[in-house]
Image (cartoon, rainbow, N blue to C red):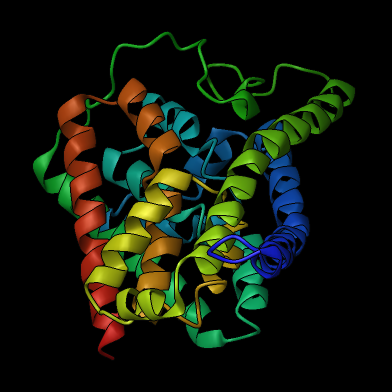
Length: 308
């Protein structure tokens, strides 16, 4: 068979697809288990206690809380909403929302493994995420009031993995029930996020098989165009932050380092699924400026990384 689609391309597509999925599988599984445990056994009150009163210090601490309270990006928006309802300042809650899905031990391990223990990629990803989250938190504090939430039903949750918490963030079930809920939440979240991983892996594998290498190299090595392409890719595929590094690493031979970092930073902060949850939770003007500032900072940071 001749042309773009042939047996060799089909075999290469299967190999690339399976390699991405199989490498990402254990990290995504571990991520949803940790997220479900945190959801059912740790309250927002516990998070609130570790936040200092000083504005600048609270923003820094909030950007690092993911190491203590690992959160998946699919369930972070409802948690942040409840934090705000309990009196946590807007700038602190937003900083936590942006950084926690990336400043996560599972995500750090996945990134290190996906890029064959290239510590520079981990440093670029985590450093960029912390800087963007802190800067956005301070900018929000300057331009927005503390009441940017919509009037929503406090009993309604937009994410299945957060459906077993009361208004004040306290578990409402017995220990046995919480274990059952943890298993159920982890299962639901795994299958929910698994389709995004599979979709992203298929697109990544398909692009490398169908697109000529010359085109990938011409786009990927352009310091500006490569960033825009990977940011759009991250926004639309909405893959879990514990698995996106494996998709990014599949482009490491053709795309610039900055564009790969942009893919791994923007996706957990602002993608299609998160944007919909943000629009349901916050006022439209606030969501627009939040997404715009995050995307702008992400693009600028990636451009700087490309020229380091």
